[in-house]
Amino acid sequence: MVWFKKSQYFVLLLLAVLVFFSARLTEFDLSKFKDFENMGDFLSKWFPMNTQNLPYLFQESLLTIAVAFLGSLFGLMIALPVSFLAAKNTAGYTYLYTIIRFFLSFLRSVPEFVFGLILLTTLGLGPFPAVIAIVLHNIGVLGKLIAELIEAADKGPMEAMSAVGTTRWIGNVFGILPQIWPNVLSQFFYRFEVAIRTSLILGLIGGGGIGQQLFIHFKTFQYQLVSVDVMLIMIIVILVDFTGGKIREKVI
Amino acid sequence: MIQFENVSVRYPGAAEPALKKLNISIQNGEFVCVLGQSGAGKSTFIRCINGLQPITDGEIRWGYKPLSSMTSKEKLEVRRKTGMIFQHYNLIPRMSVIQNVLTGLFGYKKSYENLFGLFKPAERQLAIDTINQVELFVEPTRRVENLSGGQKQRVAIARALLQNPKVFLGDEPVASLDPGTADRIFQLLKETHDKRNLVTIINVHDVGLAKKFATRIIALKNGALFFDGVPDDFNHEMYTQLYNH
Image (tube, rainbow over all chains, first blue to last red; front, top):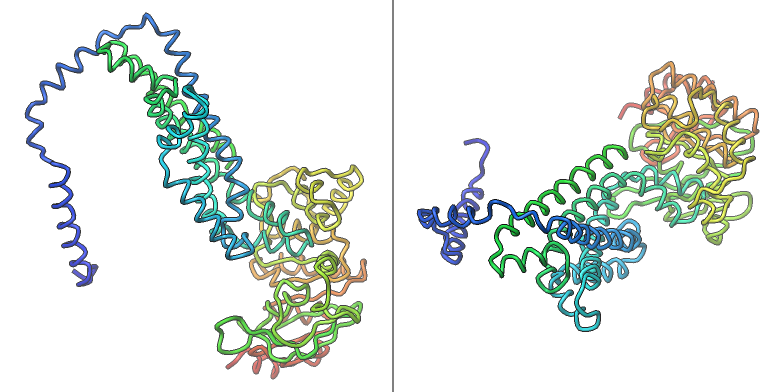
């Protein structure tokens, strides 16, 4: 057992204890699966799919994509400059770095759902508050992730830009951005994918889109429409993943 | 032209200073090679000259003016007048040869012009001419990652030359290149040195190259000046003493 140290056995024991208590709290019990026929019965109600409303549901899907797209793109556009102030090597002042990091973690700690509920009071029902909620959360997430990419970037090009005699911020932009760009893009597309799932949830509080349709169909027992909604959602997510991968390939 | 007066550099937390009370004066037209073991302070020495590395004690003068009393604008001016190349080339990835070379003009232009790449046709032509001058025979639109080491260093030299420098610094510029390429790069540096009447200061591990091209050799040992003189005076005995503990 040369690979393991004594302290690692302790970690193993700790993990076992944590698993035990978490399982108790979550009522984790695989034997409950013995009633799985219920699930089969339920799923059989989903078919055949009711494609009558397909054009309308398609339109709602586009709305979902639009909400997620704006939410993550505007999030990226704001997060990108902010992240330079949230990275140790480019912030310049420690207090600035600390304040921005704190601000970003605040934005991350508030779920989009909560932002959405608060924004409803001024913006009313509809997709717009959903967009803003996703933008706010994404500033927090992308700001932190990009700041970490900046901190891990190779110093060489930055040093070369200092030697050229350009101003600090131009040096930072050219010394760092081209290096981290592919990773920024992949973070962006991942956040886009997440934003699609988020905008589904925001449909529950009136954010519109295919998520709201799913919610309505579910609550009114229209399971043959539920299956269409789920199919559309799967298509959207796969589509975003696929185009993201293609675009990133082009950039690298 | 460039004067070191009792210059010391101590890195935070280091027991020994990286440079110890250096007094060196470098005149116009000199081609200086800096020798010394790894960790002897060669890189620190080179980086002090254009202020990339702040010094902890002493004074570095450009002409009469000490670096420490310069405004940040004057410091940028010093950087602009100093072309610099590096061991790992430090090119900007995912950008083309000509885009990389044009960044050499950044010190002369306004921030928004740099940000949006607003270069005049004459400036682009200058970049193309300089690419030809460093004998870089590749498409200017090719991305720099796919070039060989020697080609990358030529791009870096072209970038530095676009600064229209008075001083040319090299921090181990040939340490990652094969001996033949290293010799050709030194040849190029020497030619540009003569043609443009530069002050050239280069760190190098290869004593042969230093003796072949330099007009003056400076050797550092443990951060202190070990040798300062013409290449002919740097004999085998010196060599042994410098590189043995």
